[in-house]
Image 1 (spheres, rainbow, N blue to C red):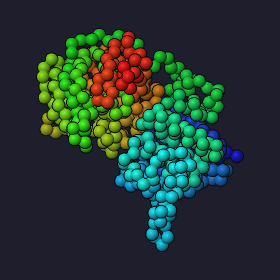
Image 2: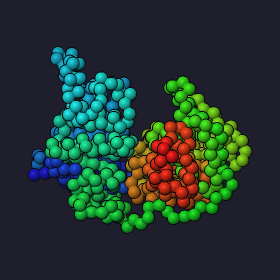
Image 3: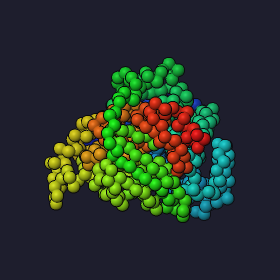
Image 4: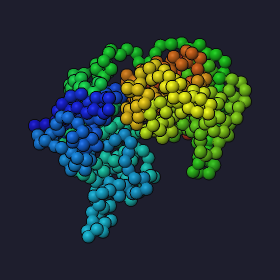
Length: 503
């Protein structure tokens, strides 16, 4: 008897069949990975399981311990033992760890919360998971990794027998990932069934008992992880064999497109604390300049300050094509032909309730549309270009951006900046949360843009990505430049030495 069975699930949105007869099973104590390209249907299937899409809005059956279930809402699903930890955390940062764990289910009598009991239970739960976190600490004071572990504690406080984890390691350090996996192995020994969604195939193969692959809303297959290779899984995900993931090309470098001198960036919260300390660098036309470093090294702050978007204090000299320029706002950067694909696409890159068309033409509206009135025909023609070249999966430019998968949303952000006609393009974590097939498409586009003479500055936490795409790499550690390498000299060992400040 399976712990969970999902049979022939069909879910449709206007004009799109997101799930087309998907079936999935989970056993007690099983670690079952669900993989597929962005838009394959993984998150939609889990939203059916969690009650986000209630019974009646989809076809098919859900059985838990062989008993048919019809969830009207998230609470029904939780009461049946299902807990889902989404990629975007749902914690209330102004509340304490204990308050978050028992939010909505606080121990109370006559409507009065028993705070002693609440923190006692929270402390015991954290201790059982070997988490050294103070239950009275405000969640906003914790790092992202610890917040992710608090989310898991919150899920387990509801006695979940089925735990779904959606990209849980996207923002974790290596040590935090190790801690998470230790916890998940303990839960496995307690017969908790886990559904794991991740684009990181190393993690998938390290932890999984079975792997199910979805493609275009359909189940491609389910097999024991021991009977599969990474190449086989990737081929099933994308529907084709995958060779070298990074395009082989030698860029012809031109004149210096951007030069930055003496860049220093200060914290907006702590007076005189330098996040970037007196850095100078340049990037040439046709060059991909990689910026490597660990979390907190100052990479994003560096790009934000050059672009005129940093909220704190900063100073620097900027030269575009050899001429000194003054950039005090993103509008000024756009006028000087600089584009910026930001790390947080939902906060800084997109207006999710708006259409692809509105998002894609937003930054370049002055040049794309009319001077005084918008020209929708001209905008639509302009947007159709990146939609086709970037292979954005949507029926039309009028599709609401928030309904797209994360990978397709990222392509919309990239398309938006390409429509401004940039000569210099900043890419901050351009493939975060994107599957292997979509990554290859982004890599190919980056390579093509460089071949066309665009100067590209690439920030990525994935070292193979930096090394595979960059003509030159500079390394930051605690806000200072600790290394600069040509493509031939940039070995993983040398870059990591510099990134840890030991070079």
